[in-house]
Structures are given as structure tokens and as C-alpha cells.
Length: 104
Image 1: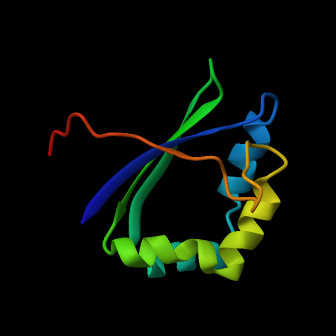
Image 2: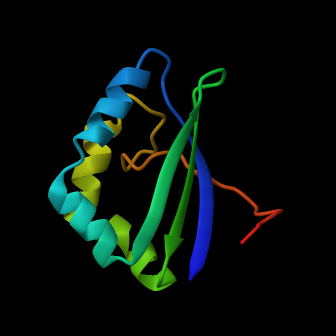
């Protein structure tokens, strides 16, 4: 099992909208993430900086790495690009975080 963490940036003023969109996450997107072996996926918001911190577990790194090729994933990114920093392909600007401590 791989444990991964990364950070993203939410545009100021879209905190409520970001939460709303995730509270109403598309069932087919949830299914796709689970099919890719993702579990224990959590996103935290630092309200001072509007930085999003995500942590997830992935059973298979290759399946996780294939998500950007999925049309549904690309559709979600396009849906989210108006409220967060995004790359040219609409994927969120995401910075991997280095694990420095873990208490099992």
C-alpha cells in the first residue's frame, strides 16, 4: 500500500464552493477512484493560505498513475479549474509532499 500526500491551491473566496462540490462528488468519480485502488482519501484546507493538503492510500501506483488518461477524471478537472490553480490540461497544480513521520 502506498501512502501519498500532496498540496494544491484553492482560489480565495471559493472555500464553500470547493466543499460543496466535494460533498456532491459524482458517484461515478468515486467509483473510478476506488477502482484505481484509492482509499482513505482526505483533503484538508489551511484557511490562512487557502492551501489544500491531500493524503490518500493507493493499492497500485500504476493504476493511480493511469487516472489522468480517464475521460471522467479530465471532466472533473475541467469542472474544478475555475476555483483552483490548474495546469494547461486542467489538472490541478499539485505538489507532492515528502513524508517525514508516520505513527501506525
